[in-house]
Image 1 (spheres, rainbow, N blue to C red):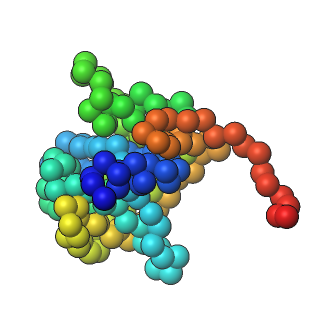
Image 2: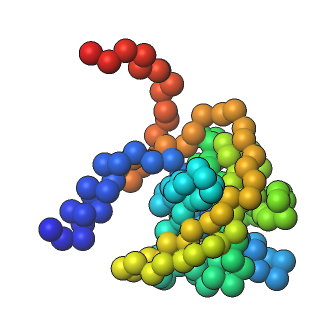
Length: 160
């Protein structure tokens, strides 16, 4: 198996889209990521996985905190800005929540303090103790096969 095959296989997993934010010396830094997961309910823990080449890696290492902003379906542009896909510089308005930067209008803002980090392969996994959450009632931004998609909200109520 080559790198492209592995990447294509991972692209078959439908994910939400997040922007990870942190702050160092009053300046916010962020990146788009879909490598986020909840780890534990008791205690409340979440993990983000950051590539060793990402500039935010050193910022989270320094700040020892981050927010996970789960994007809504009207935030594609924000996803592209923080993924570095838009050439022109854009001013992004941030708010503060739990003394950390967040993106307003996200489905969820999850504030975390880093309690552990693990280097695994070419990524660092940051385990965050969740200190607070903020929720909105919107539709999620969905990513599948390298593209953004709209979630059709039809609930399956019966299994056959």
